[in-house]
Length: 117
Image 1 (cartoon, rainbow, N blue to C red):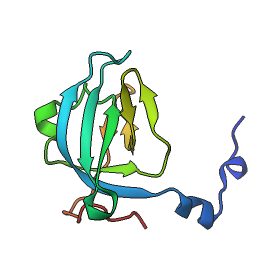
Image 2: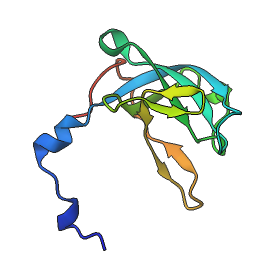
Image 3: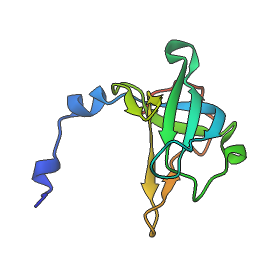
Image 4: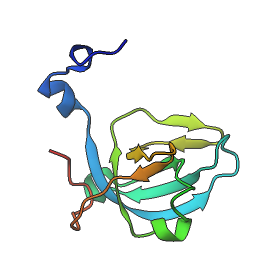
């Protein structure tokens, strides 16, 4: 059983997770994935550059809806191989009541690469 105390982390541990905002520059179907997914390319600004991400968000978003959208992602995890694709960023979202992912985002435009504080 998971308890609140087992989930407690230090502030330094939290700050080790590098969460940045970026803009989706391309979104393509990912037919090789086991579950319906897209392959994204996200621009995280000049410091980090463009990174790839595999996302299972096909229930709520079309590729056209994703282009130009700002998304949040963890940029300091090691790349994860998903079939023939290397996912370099964990794009963040919450599960809705049916378990489908809804992306988190800022309610104001933010410069690409800005870090979550």
